[in-house]
Length: 112
Image (cartoon, rainbow, N blue to C red; front, side):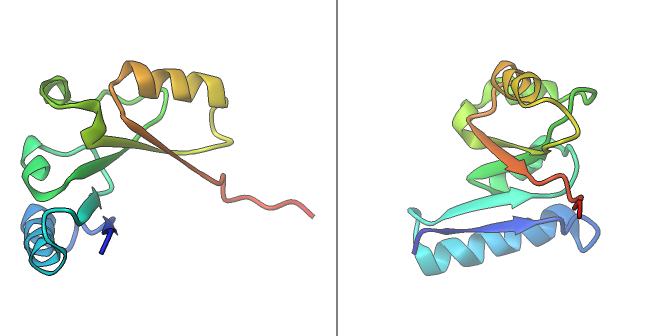
C-alpha cells in the first residue's frame, strides 16, 4: 500500500471528513501509507493532523498561511493549472513559498 490522494471535499464535512479518512487509510496501510489531502482551498492548520502531504492551490496572486513556515516543505504540494501562468514564475513561487512537491495540471482547454 503506497497511499491515496483525497481531494476537494471541503463542502462535505471539511476537517472532520479528512481526519476520518486519514485514520481509516492509516489503519489499513500503516504509517507508511501516505495520505495526500487537497481540501480545495487554503485551510487552517488543523489539516496538517489529517494529512501527510497537504495540497494547496497556488497561483501568483494568493497569500498562503503563515503557519506553513513551521513545517517541512515535504509536507506541502503546490497544485496549479498550467497555462494560466508561465511555468518558470509559478515554479519559482512554489519554491519560495516552501512547497516540497509541484503538481502541474492541464489548462483544461482544447484547440482543434
